[in-house]
Amino acid sequence: MSLSRTRTQTLLSLSLLAFLAACSTVPPEPGEPGAPGSPEQPAVDIGLQPLTVPPLASLPETPPRVLEGKFVPVGWGALPGWQNDDLGQVWKAFINNCKGLMRPVSGSLAMPARSAPRAWQPVCAAAQQAGLSADAGAAQVRGFIEAQLQPWRLADAAGKPAKNTVTGYYEPLIRASRKRSGQYQWPLYAPPDDLLTVDLGTVYPELAGKRIRGKLQGKRVVPYDTRAQIAGSENQPPVIVWADDPVEAFFLQIQGSGRAQLEDGSMIRLAYADHNGRPYASIGKWLAEKGEMPLAQTSMQNIKAWAQRNPARVQEMLNANPAMVFFREEKIVDPQLGPKGAYGIPLIGERAVAIDTRFVPLGAPVYLATQYPASNQPLRRLMFAQDTGAAIKGAARTDFYWGFGDEAGAKAGRMKQTGEMWVLWPKGAGAPAAR
Image (cartoon, rainbow, N blue to C red):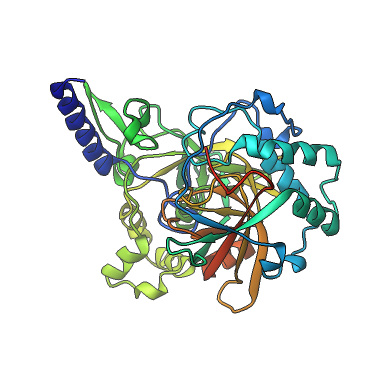
């Protein structure tokens, strides 16, 4: 390659990175100002289809990705509370996870560090042949898992057990209407037609996983509109529903998805579809800086009360956060299943977590040892690594999905504990790896 071409590509890469810093960010993280990964959206929802396990020979042999996590094999007795975890409702989650592991590889899904499908094929084939029902007993499920999987303790760079922060997220509920009227004044948008998403990794491999969002202005790509610009525009994105409360609608965006109960009593899901690429800014911090309330008191309840006292300033408060999340409407077929995480599989409350794929591959069952929110009561549970987040960085850093509704939201809001993790990997497949 010529020097001039190398220099040109380098300069272009730097300019793209500069643009990335200006106009691209990840959408709000469930429960935190970060972002879940954009889930793969297959033409057919595999979460609702039977498990299909292809022959091992049909799965491509892809080189493993080196994970930053260090792994130490241990016996099942090393997992604190393993025998006390009620696995009676876990089989459905295990089978759903296998559906993700065994799905055909696609270009966009290949970007995150996903569990190696070839390593999991014998396990998922055995699960298919086991014939257990969705409500299989704890003893049956535990026996299967112990026979098929090997626990590996996740360690830090020094080889010591990795310990990190465990936060929580959930699927909220809002009340909404298809039409704007009365109290239903706060729009939740579908992606706008002029929003561009550019995957830089398709052009420059060194930028794999980096995306920019913007819009065309003449022949130039410029950052997409801020929240304030969208709210003040005459050409707004399509509105899916109008919410009755601006703060609840805002927090639904922070969570990344949620359910909306319509006026006729029916319910739909608003699932994360895209975002405007602008950086997240805390409205709680804005209220504190304006002297409206101490930062420590900026809970959703207190922010709602402030909004009710200051209706003329609500849009000003919301505009303090330039980021905007766009949604797509989904039917709720199974109320037990939550929104799809970055892995593209519907999350199940208290059995799914978001992890850092540099250390743990998507789709891996993990065992988490932490505490219940704001307490010392042990919370030790088999989970499935099915989501990611920009704020979820580091070995054993975890975001715990609590499920749907107000109770789940209360737990998620109080969750900030310390935890450690074990990755459960197929026996005989060596240490955990990703592709």
